[in-house]
Length: 289
Image 1 (cartoon, rainbow, N blue to C red):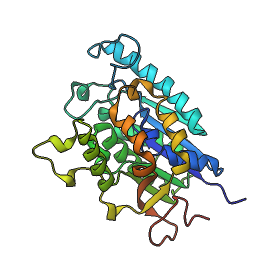
Image 2 (cartoon, helix red, strand yellow; image 1 turned 90 degrees about the horizontal axis):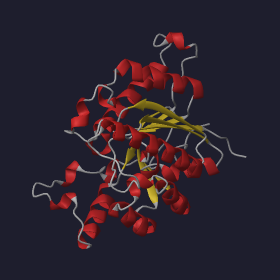
Image 3 (tube, rainbow, N blue to C red; image 1 turned 60 degrees about the vertical axis):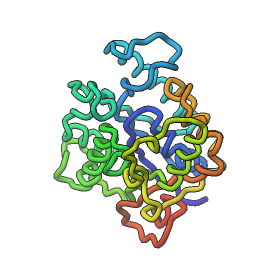
Image 4 (cartoon, rainbow, N blue to C red; image 1 turned 45 degrees about the vertical axis):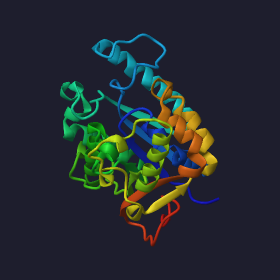
């Protein structure tokens, strides 16, 4: 039997674990690896129109109720993905950049950075992951919570390896061997938007100031492409467990329809590696021993 490893993912909201890493999670679980998910917010600022209950998007109590619903959906999705353990940090969803929710005192965007770093350090030292994955410096698409997740996770990796940082947690320092950012291939993203436009859907291509270089990850920067073709069906089953956000969403219907052609891979950028790896990888575990 091949050696098993521990994968830790730090995501911003319930459903993020499915969209960019669901296939990798399923493949890892099938291969006997341990998967640890850390979800930073409850998703209170998500969509309400297809939730099945009457909630007011302007009501803070109803936003809180949405957060409870989304955490229940996360539990269901995690079972489908066969995630070993899920940890939720419980911060409030900040909403998209410029939304009123950005200013909420409990929003993840405004959370004390040292506090969040310390909490993630505790998980890193507890589970000693071989691979950690989160978003890039742009947060994938600029969402404040994704930006924050990148910042605190990057800092936590350094802090977890330093015995002088957070010594009171009582666990030994741990340096994570491999660190990755999620990556949406720019060429595939543009191709998907062109097809959606053909179907009459509004996309960023409709913006008169549209610039390709603002979206996705340049294909030449991607270091790791994981074939998830055999995980696609179960990945989309997990995604649709987040029914409050997926129901009525044309984009995810389109992705499911075209998945075997456009989305049979999940892509990543290798940021740091203690393992010797040359060329493009087909697995985030390459070079580990």
